[in-house]
Image (cartoon, rainbow, N blue to C red; front, side, top):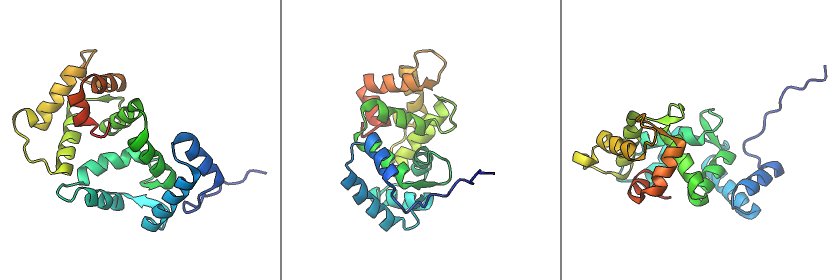
Length: 191
């Protein structure tokens, strides 16, 4: 009695509440948010960005690389509600964070992408897989010696691991990236 089932929100409609939330959590103006929304709907008429479409967009930006593995990690980071698609709000928060978020926020987002098993720690295998995916994305072929993903991951963890457990917490990852410009450029190129 009196209990209404939750109403479904149409992903194609940009509500005033969504605009206010995005204005409060990004540096975008209402006009910019509306412009992004028009473009988002042009590219994603359903109001949802699928993983396949996400990969296709990345492939346009990195034509000489292979985007699939990198996109697998990035997509799951941006799909905050884990429903298999990225809606406009998730998209805008991701854009804002990757373009203009402060360094700590951007590094925290990168950590979340590396920690794909959501354990709260990054181990050598997780880091090596993402480094390999990043190499694929940019078309990097030289993976020998110190450039080999597992060796590179072990070295980064050795440098940043304060606790000695051979894994990185979010705090260790952020501090390590902030203190070592070479590591930061490798792990978070746009930071």
